[in-house]
Every structure is written in C-alpha cells, then in structure tokens.
Length: 275
Image 1 (cartoon, helix red, strand yellow):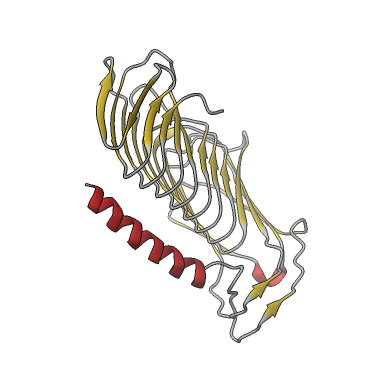
Image 2: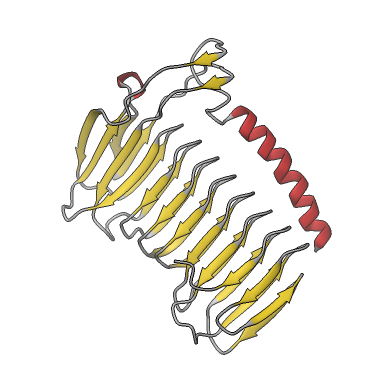
C-alpha cells in the first residue's frame, strides 16, 4: 500500500509541475501571441453582462482565472452576472435544460501575469438544479445553495460549499476545500491543499491528499463510524473520542453507516469540529 502511495506522490508531483507550468494564469495567459509581461487592468467590480434563464436543470461552467460564486435566491429564475473585461465575457447558452457558461479558449503566453481576474455570479434556488459542474484554473469557487450533484475542478483555486446534496466531487491541486454542508457521497482530492468536510449520518467520504490535512466534523459527537486510513507518515486522530493511530489504520467506532476512506502521503486525518 505504501509503495502505491509513493507512486501516487511521484505521479501527482509530476502532474502538479505540468499543470501549474502550463495552466496557471500566473505563468501563462491565453491569446494568439507571446508576451513576457501582462499588465492588463481588468475591473473585477464592473458589471459587464446580466442574463436570465428559465427551465434550467443543469449548469456547466468552464472558466479560466475568474472566481465563480453561486448564490441562493427565492426565484425559480436563474440569473447570471459577469464582472470583468468586455472581451472576456463568457458565452452563455441554454439548450434542453442545460445552461452552459463558457469562456472561449485563448492562446497567449506570458511569463508574468498581473491581470486582475473577473467574476461570474450565479443566482439560483436551492434544490432545483440536478447537476452543477464548475471547471476553472486559478479562480476560487463558492457555492451556497443545495445542489443534488456538485462537481468542481480547479487548479490553484479554493472550493467552498454551504449547501447539502447527494454527491460532491471536489478536486483542486493547491487550493483548500471547505464544505460546511453535508453530502451523501463526497470524493475530495488535493495535492497540497487542506480538506475540511461536514458529514451526515450516512455519508460516505473518500478523501485523497499528498501533504494536506483532512478534517471532518461529525454531525453528532457520539455517532459511530468506520475508518480506513492509508498513509506513509500521517496520523489518524479522533478528537471526539481521544483516539490516535499512526500509519495505516482500519477501525470502527460504534454502529453507523458513516464511513471514511482517506489516503495521504504525509498529511493527517482528524475527526473534530473544525468550523
């Protein structure tokens, strides 16, 4: 198992170098030529566009350096606002209930990017959207409403969620993950970022990190759980019941459907109130 984790570490570090070297907007930009510096001053607070949509079932967002913030409101209407540069306005299309918000690919390379990123705001009711998929590079993602299925993938941005739902897939290389609401199934992965999760009584938690720390708060301090923890040098600590184990651990406490499957290389796994 430790050989597998070490192999994962090598692969993840190689991927981190490649992704950060190519995708991160700090080192590279996008358009059609080559520049050493980018001093472009975008106004992140300037409202450029506002669109309204009805009969939306799924939302798919694909951006680059923009932050994505999803707010909860009472209307059944979906409202999308974009703040930033006019010529970086994402394309918004609705087809068969699928709303797509996509930034067009640009290919300009520069070594130092001093550009201020834009922001995409989405206003939606809780429990209406079946799937919310967000892909970004360096922007942060924040989701407040309840979403049945949430999938977020960024490179250097952080992921924060407040709602509840059935499944959440959360992936960031160097950013942190914080989920204040519980999901039935959670798959969270980072390389160096920390992971903070809140559980439900029957949550199934899969968490994977190389050097980050995984912290999970239990919905009740007396609830039972099952833990499988694989690590090269990290530790598992249950601060509710004052238990501590080193290395690989497979244990259970009490009787519950709540389960954790956590893999790290040097990071630790802690059960505690982290909020």
